[in-house]
Length: 23
Length: 86
Image (cartoon, rainbow over all chains, first blue to last red; front, top):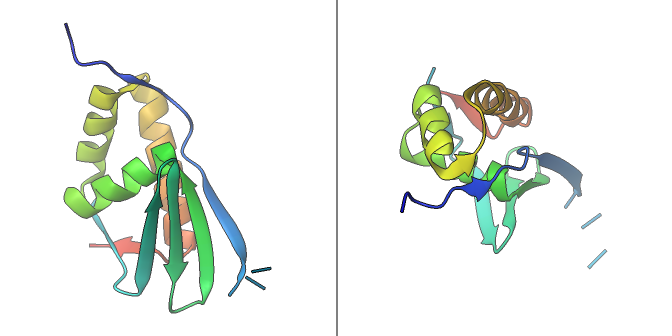
């Protein structure tokens, strides 16, 4: 068999708040 | 075009993505699984064409889509000051 290719999901970069970093 | 990660970028890889911290700007970011794979490929090959080729081999995606999405995420990483032209 050919190597299994993974389903594609659009790459996403999410910006978060400043080190606000909630903990 | 070739790129490299800035020295001040710290990365924690998760099962479904990664978290990045830019020590210069004190901002942090998250990447989904595909974005993380592109980040890894930037470290490995640095070359945009090679990144597209690797994604075509690993994912069910058309070349046109892969090329435009790689271009877009690289631009976003540049805007976030996480990568710079090598």
